[in-house]
Length: 287
Image (cartoon, rainbow, N blue to C red):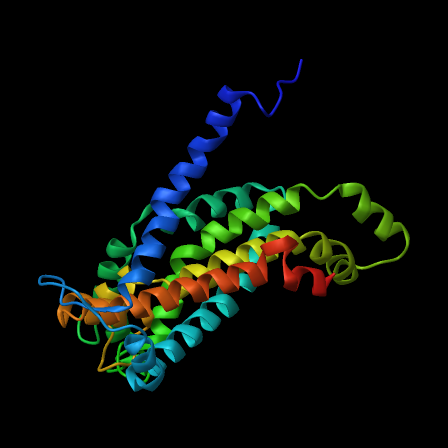
């Protein structure tokens, strides 16, 4: 017998996750948004300045640069991770001893923290001690120079997180009925036709979910970037989270740093709605 939704005990049970979400997500966002209207060094008293921080945000060249870096980094991460993870997911979902063995080693980067990954790759990419020194055409190349640092970080980040998205695509592909491919084969469709007309449309929800995780995760990515470059050389890899950290914890400009954080939160919420809200605006247009 189903219990009524007006049951006090059931309502209390439902309220627990909402309360947890409010305390851990909504309250910090609202607190950051409120702090963006103050001038504060993190120690002394706060001074109400209204929209002055937001006005400064519109004129701040460093903020505009950090926003550009965030978008370029996010786009590069999506372009690298999505096709590679999709291909690997389909490949590992099929039977075969070699595929299963390769899948075990391919998922190893998931076991490491971002800090550990950053330290490992710092040593590997060192122009004097790393692996590039032993490749004559690449000897002397510094992958973390101003010209290559952002691309290097995007590739290292992709190396770490491609296995996670591969798991998503592998599970989704295994859920596609095999009868669809048999019917397509009887109708004379080749493997490429089956991919475009069966696999890709049925993987659309997974692609949207994976893209959402990549986009929001890349926009808010901090730890590996800080470990490897600290936003440098200069401002070459200073994205919004790194710029926020520099403002709030190095320059003690907490109020303005909170403004950058509030903008980043609102941007992430907007992109989340675009990708998955109300079944996904982009998903509906695709379908």
